[in-house]
Image (cartoon, rainbow, N blue to C red; front, side):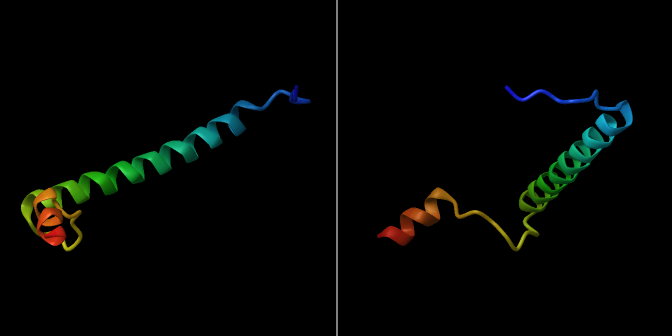
Length: 58
């Protein structure tokens, strides 16, 4: 089993966590923005609804 040779410093650990949190916050912001634009009807990107898929298959 792999074992780290030295203890990771707190600053290195915090740096990794900050990167992860920054990425997560950015993705959450994108998702919220897309949700708001879909609700207001201003979005140019929309997943097809089940009704539209049913019409396409007929």
